[in-house]
Image 1 (spheres, one colour):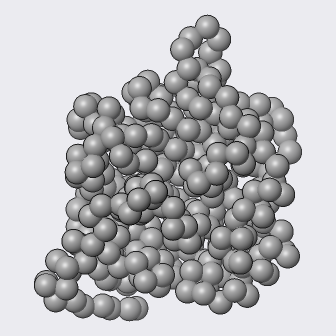
Image 2 (cartoon, rainbow, N blue to C red; image 1 turned 180 degrees about the vertical axis):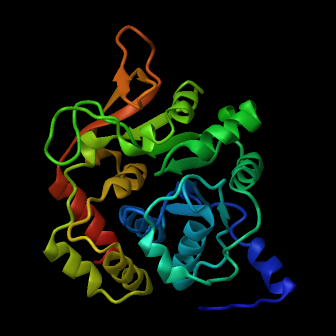
Length: 306
């Protein structure tokens, strides 16, 4: 257990930091189901290592969202980023979350009692038309935000998400499936894809082949920074051998869209969570369809474990 106390004045000072993004920075909000699969932690690590991105806040979704929030907050604290608020979404059905043991009992400045949707709404209204919303879990919080205030959709610059499948499954299978983040709440995904928000989509077509091999893991885990140390511990709590870096691709596309072949497509979500391409309709998403895994890993490792 780790307890951190701060004066009201100190917390107020931290809250005033990073009011405006420095020139060239992309302000983002991260919505994540960190704590189940380990790729969310690898995605957050990439965000924390990129000066091009200004992280305004983190919201958690699915299952025990409070435990997920503690995990995200502890990663921020270890990385020296206590000024980034973390807010939990509404809880959902139980899910395996062994990684959250690392943050059991954690309290500190990143954690806030604010609800996830309230944090999103506040930041988007503070900087309308500027913020990129990065969703790497199910789309429950994003749909709830739009239901709360449909006008907010026009104030979001772009939604970048990991989810869906066009012509690929998990692993090497080329038969498309209902991908986890979409099928976990198809109604939420339907609302988001019909919202008119510009969407950049990283489906299984460009993520399912991103297996982090033993040599790359060694390079990260021996880097010995606060963030890579956190990744090492979370990887071992995850207790599987080879992570697939689904979620980091969504973050990488914000920084370098050339990592993937992109195409404008009309996407609809069916009741089972399949993402279908609809011919003859106006495009509602920019979809990543092909990538070179070697180029992606060169990109990732240069930034997280140079």
